[in-house]
Picture 1 (cartoon, protein in one colour):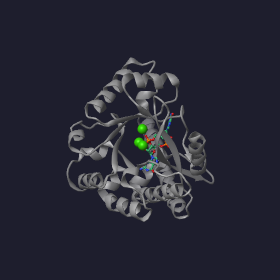
Picture 2 (picture 1 turned 120 degrees about the horizontal axis):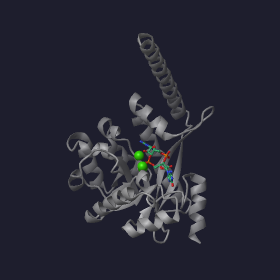
Picture 3 (picture 1 turned 180 degrees about the horizontal axis):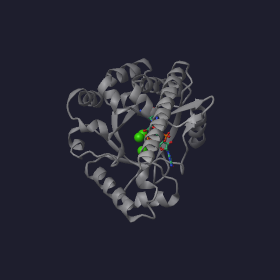
Picture 4 (picture 1 turned 120 degrees about the vertical axis):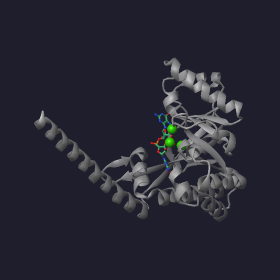
Length: 278
Ligand code: C2E
Ligand code: CA
Ligand code: CA
Ligand code: CA
């Protein structure tokens, strides 16, 4: 038993070391990628579920790694949060997104709406509201063209710096969206006090909507909360026509997902938008 325990702990330590090494590699490679301009924005359309009208798009960060291939954000965002790189990373995304909006406007695609993900940590460590204001001004954009998607984690702390920034952003006219709604552990009372205008139904509730009655009940509850509080409810991960119909029946009017469009780069997105104008 003693022997087994020792092996076990050695194995455990080895795997921990490996993952620490791996993290350090990722961290330094991510820093390099950011400063070398190797990160990219992709865009996924957000549509009216009833008639597929385009309402906006979400900006999703992409890292094409020369050796690893595409590193998924679920892999590198947590690393960036742990090593303090998330502020620079999300600041870069915001600036690049605003620049893209302006370029599209100049190319004859004006008035588009963009949703940008911002790590809750950045609201604690950085002045997001000031940066947003600066970027909107610099690129000649309306505040109403921008939505910030924030996870519930941020809403837990209803005082202090993050809260003040949410109020400042709202006063500027920037929309605030609660991402992954219902997957956190937070109470709902913040919805009453904070200037939120949208909640996003996480794709984990949408996936088995038509086979799992529990998921349907939870999705329905989230949609009802949104309706009762006069918030937009956006369903994530809509992949099938059956899911679209069920969501509409439950009262959800907006969605995004592979059924309508995968995340695509800026050029493909512009083409996609133009092809729908006709
Ligand atoms: P999220 O904000 O919940 O984004 C939705 C995720 O669902 C995206 O994954 C998107 O590509 C994926 N998705 C979209 N449609 C479908 C579908 O029909 N089916 C399925 N199965 N998946 C779909 P992605 O791009 O891998 O991003 C993962 C997460 O990384 C995001 O989750 C977000 O939390 C984070 N993230 C992405 N970009 C940024 C960023 O610029 N800043 C920060 N802080 N986080 C980001
Ligand atoms: Ca999001
Ligand atoms: Ca989600
Ligand atoms: Ca998320």
